[in-house]
Image 1 (tube, helix red, strand yellow):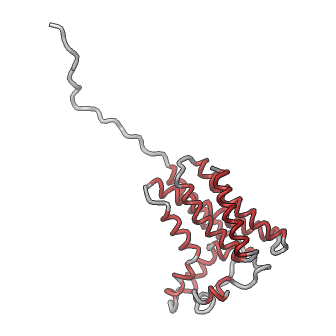
Image 2 (tube, rainbow, N blue to C red; image 1 turned 120 degrees about the vertical axis):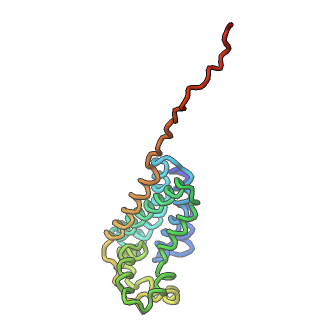
Image 3 (cartoon, rainbow, N blue to C red; image 1 turned 45 degrees about the vertical axis):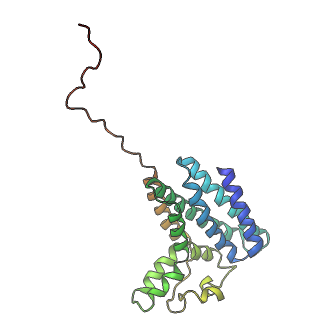
Length: 229
């Protein structure tokens, strides 16, 4: 599964790289690709080592394509490493969530939807927070752990305009306008958030099932063997 997941992820990552170019959108497309491929592939496996191999395959292909931005002098190796680490922990979290969903017989598409919703909460959640006294505090907590902001925080030297202020995003979200926020300078909070999710979900997915206890009959079964007279 490592080779198959790697090749599938690599094909899509290269296509994104050719279509989008070496810019911030390439990194966000990698997050979206991981959000779709990882849960769908992981849910088809039951063994932990095979699930982990899928995560590594998807992650490695995306990270290799991102590495081309270093060779092109778009970003530094240190920036690439920070972004890659965010992708890795995010992939582990959604893989664990997909494995847990599979354990309790929930379609893996639910994990995909949750992952995409988490990536782009500024579009659907932030407008609902407008005017609330706690809006800035809530947004601050969410921004600190969100992979899109964590990746741009890691790439801030090369991409210093927050993605929420790009022309397309500016029409879709009000954070930075109605609700101020600070771009995270470290990926540690993002790692903590997703590390906790990965640990809990994977533990739930692979917790040993309770063996069914045999119920002893109240009366021994009647002897069915023929008796000689």
